[in-house]
Image 1 (cartoon, rainbow, N blue to C red):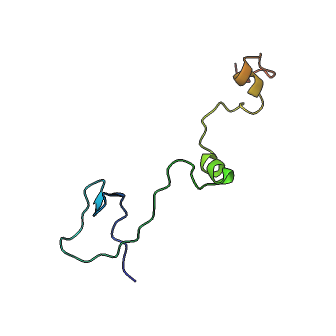
Image 2: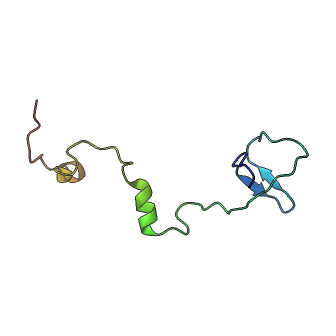
Image 3: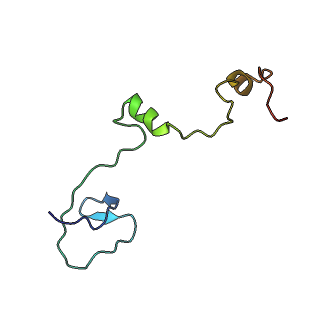
Length: 84
């Protein structure tokens, strides 16, 4: 099996695939090319796939879960902050 040299994105113009960025490949060498259509946004994904990508990606205060009403609606915090 051949070694993967580089993964790249390309645009098909009706005649040839044109890489979006410069590639470091040997001229006139033969390559095996596997074509996979790039999925834009959430097309073709289940809701679980989308949510799984978001896990752990939200930056929020440590008390976000306990004080969600405060952060969402501006109500007073239910618990006093320790160390203040």
